[in-house]
Length: 183
Image (cartoon, rainbow, N blue to C red):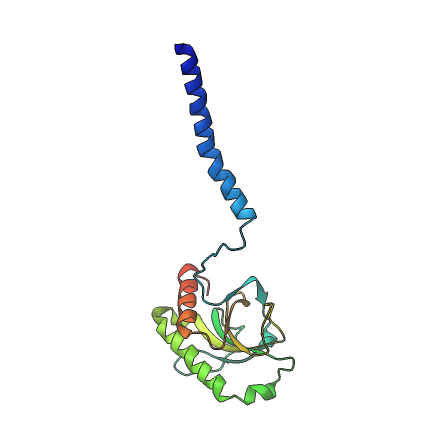
């Protein structure tokens, strides 16, 4: 009788260990590959993350301003680094539109300067630019102006609606600069 209870006890221990080890792995596999529709995944970024990033050519940049004291105008492709951009969605971007800045664009430039200044010692790694694109690869966008972040590899990685809280852009840019030492 003692042998039978020892045998049963060892099988029960084996089944318990296998269950404790396999059930979490199977559950994780199922939740990873087939997540439920109502599962809310919180994110820490405030804008729309573009995956994959959108490559931006130098011909898309219309106007650039750096955060240096002279406020000089430079070519964005000459200066490697992060760029805080004002994105204009338009099929016909031209130099004529560059010359006609609206008050809204000027206000946005001031807000970008405030964000860059708030970065402190990391401010030298960020410049601001005006970017003209025909379209963005995001569904449900109206034909409006947007803000974005371009990485040192000239790829648009984040897009924000024009009316977004500037603190969210600051927090995202600060996090990007902290964890990435490019540019």
